[in-house]
Length: 236
Ligand SMILES: [Zn+2]
Ligand SMILES: [Zn+2]
Image (tube, rainbow, N blue to C red; front, side, top):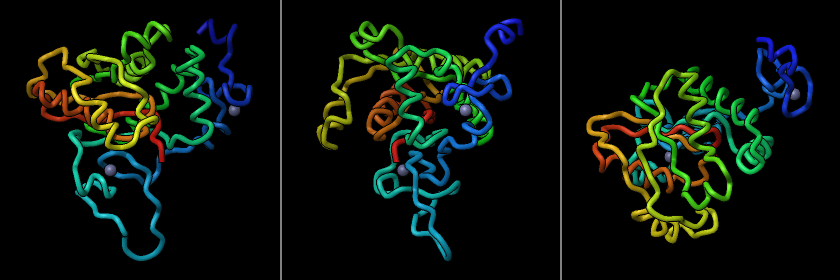
């Protein structure tokens, strides 16, 4: 592309020439914290158990964390490309708060590659976790929606804003676990009939499974047969 000659791909982390048309060099790409061993249900990173056996229960596809074993979430599978460890917080802040769209595009492409490599089951569409209008006004753009658009283009899947927020909720991280659950009750509503559909809900970072769990419950109530969660990074 002509634009590549004028603005050649440059690594957003170290400034070296980008690799393979991406704004990331091969060295920095190799050091990104890929998710690795994790709960197949909620993508929570799990320690690698050395030697004999495995401390974690399994379902057909892999290990399950204690929470998912005790109380399976409303979603079927979660896929995260990375653990939320350096440099992910810097990269996410770059597109979330500083409007760095080249970072957002790169992160979306890396998530799409990760989903492709993991051979995840293809959903009918991608549904971004909705940002409340008030935050949208403050921030100017909706990072989950923009990320979903990049992933949707790369994987040839439609993006449908089929979930809406009914009210603003305080940031989940500021609340205790029980308060989090309560805080989310009725916070979302489905904006489409999803009868029989398999859908993937997309968010940038998953810190706890409670927000995406509530979104999944809402979509299941709207008829979705299966809800999966796709995210860029998962907090250990
Ligand atoms: Zn680099
Ligand atoms: Zn889990």
